[in-house]
Amino acid sequence: MSRNIAAGALALALSACSVGIGPQGASPTTRLQVPVSYQEAYRRAVAQAEECLRGPGNYEVRGNVYEAERRARMYVQAPVTDARMAQVDVQAVGEDRSDVTVTMWGRNTWNDRALLAMRQAIEFGYTSCWPAMIPEKGEGRRR
Image 1 (cartoon, rainbow, N blue to C red):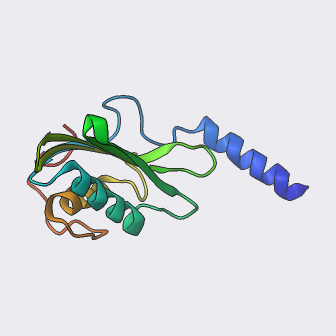
Image 2: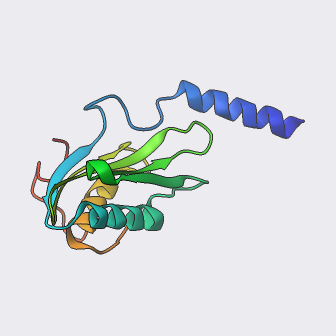
């Protein structure tokens, strides 16, 4: 009984907080174009999220590929609130070229470093929870 009350209190407290990606422009975002298919960019995003963005709980990596529209979306979802902590949108602009938008919550596991690490994972095809290179001021950050 007390466990259920504690879980309910936690859910209520979390719902009152601003958890997850905010409204348009409120969360760290980066955009890039990569010389790979939208399916490959999506696979790279999923691999990076599985490795580094599941967080300190039962955060789930989810997503969809929309073949008819030649686009895909991957996101990391919080277990209690269903808030999105990270999201990657990919749109084909050619056979082997894709536009990618990466958005993170901006706190904890889903911070600016995670944003840069995801960008580099999609761009270069390797997973790492820390960015290999820190860009010049403004490059790869909120745009």
